[in-house]
Image (cartoon, rainbow, N blue to C red):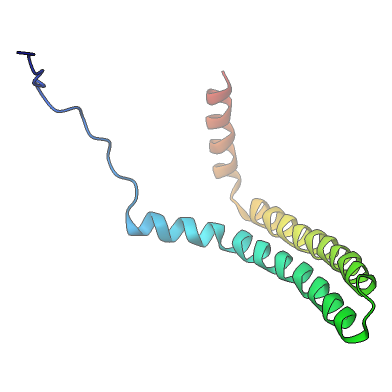
Length: 115
């Protein structure tokens, strides 16, 4: 008869960091990026779909579809660069608003971690 191993004590449990406040903060932080992804995807889909519909209506498949894809990619990259510039400017403004003492404290923490 095989012996069953009985644990002496349960393994320690990790504290759960998935509180509702953490979820809300995470979603608030990720929100602009999720919105950006959707916006970029729909920009591309709109122009490709428009090209496809024009091709079906005019019987010229695949020319407007290809044109819509090119216009969609162009609009996609323009939108990507515009939003990227906005986010960079926002991050720069936020860094400039932080007090000098806080910046020194953060630099000290980064120096300790790098060693």
